[in-house]
Length: 128
Image (cartoon, rainbow, N blue to C red; front, side, top):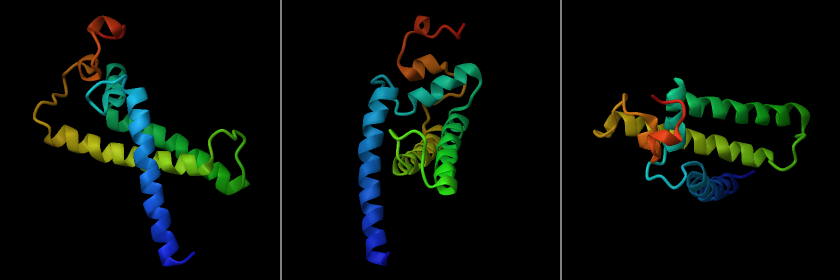
């Protein structure tokens, strides 16, 4: 692979990642304005949003590792490229969530995740 081929791969991967994160964000946040809503919802169970992202990333790393070791994946509906792109998106989401929590004056650690998720309290059975 030449440098130019690598740069083209990088550009195409970033384009695909952006398209994917937009679609998945719409699905996973239920249309909430907060792009981190699904990760922050885990805080109801004591799992910080950042830790949730890291845990999901580990699943993807394990998938990539399985491909590297075996040359194939048992589940054919998600390719190694898909798993790598998910890791890229998780790292961007992690970067964004860290920036959100450290720079966003309206974010309060004690705020119930259901408010961040855009749902009513009664829709979250694990809250008081």
